[in-house]
Image (cartoon, rainbow, N blue to C red):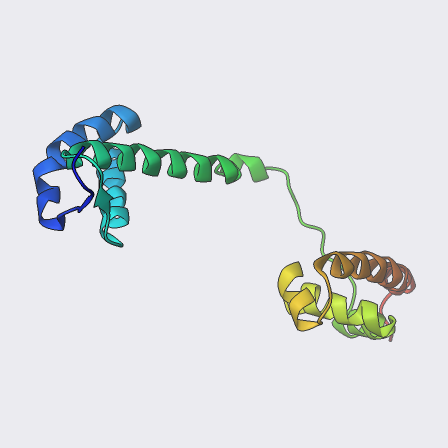
Length: 168
């Protein structure tokens, strides 16, 4: 067995066609195969690679297969999305809330400070639970609990404001 040697980046184009053929078999489409070969080359060129054999093609094939497996695993972790059609909204009418903004803010401000801060951070400012936890210097699970309790605290106040109607 020959001693390890560094992969020569200038030799990569020599293996492009063979890698593309294998990628086409793995992916099934021309566009995906091109992306896979490009991602493989980007990963190989990111840092120097040592080859333990005489043929860099075997190493590149393994790198291609590993890149494809990594992309597949990442795609499986992502939730599947389904495009919505206009017909999905037929008959849907959004109910307009008769709550005045001032009443809503007053209800939120009347909540205990810990609940109020969580509600303001997530529901008003629009931070994610993780961002809110970081800003409020607490745990993400604590934000979840405070939001749940705060919303339960504010909800009766809002419903009371709706039931009494607008102030004249």
